[in-house]
Length: 259
Ligand SMILES: NC(=O)c1ccc[n+]([C@@H]2O[C@H](COP(=O)([O-])OP(=O)(O)OC[C@H]3O[C@@H](n4cnc5c(N)ncnc54)[C@H](OP(=O)(O)O)[C@@H]3O)[C@@H](O)[C@H]2O)c1
Image 1 (cartoon, rainbow, N blue to C red):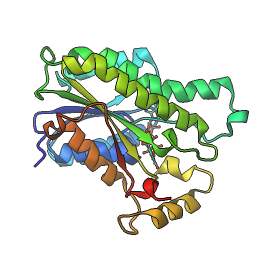
Image 2: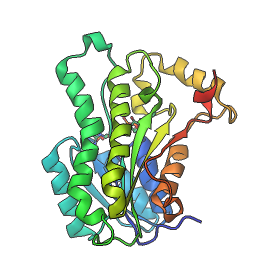
Image 3: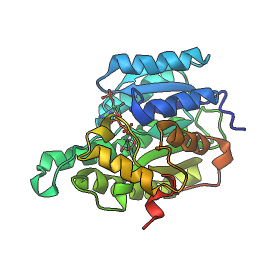
Image 4: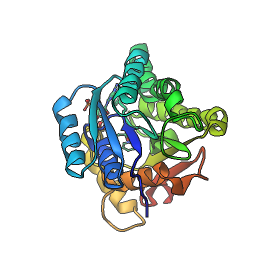
């Protein structure tokens, strides 16, 4: 059984979609959760209410994860209010669906700032809480989990900004393990297949892509749900995964291995 009682977890972008599902799953396993958001306070508060209904603490904190100062303040608030940090789920992302030939330098930089550099800000600002020994958390090893997508390896129309940022994110995770692994931190990636969320609905031909995913599934016709991704995040957050380091776990019902 996965038991996260006594753990403190931060989930970035926990106001909706996969981030919200992760926050709730971690709370169901016993963790207190920091619910980060950037624009939708009321949605973030809804996530927090669901966590509190499970008997866990929830702290709602607004922070733009692409801004170093915001992330530093976020970590200060966590230290002051909760005193420790055992798990970081770096989930918040954006990017816009554009042809690369039409992408402005600003659009490219935004995708890299929000989807990649945010992880660096989180580990730099949170290292004093995450490292073991020396950090204040309960877990023998702390866990950082980043969310990626099939676009890191495959080419999808109008997905070049996000896809290339996810490839960079996966490499960043592997390189961070060299520095953070010996200091008691595990970093891994959960690569999710297509999940029906607000951002997925903005994909060109979203309906057709979701149906295509259903048709290629090797686990039956059920579409992938945010909670399916959250289950793997919960496992990687726990001590049950202490020997998994620098890995990318794919959660897509096998659809990406099917030719
Ligand atoms: N949906 C999919 O099919 C799919 C597939 C593979 C991987 N993923 C990955 O899974 C993660 C979540 O995807 P999703 O579909 O659940 O996304 P979503 O529904 O669009 O939600 C995005 C979340 O990120 C937050 N956010 C955006 N920019 C932020 C910033 N600068 N600082 C802090 N928070 C920020 C949003 O907060 P506000 O609500 O406050 O704006 C929101 O909570 C992403 O990393 C995505 O790339 C998704």
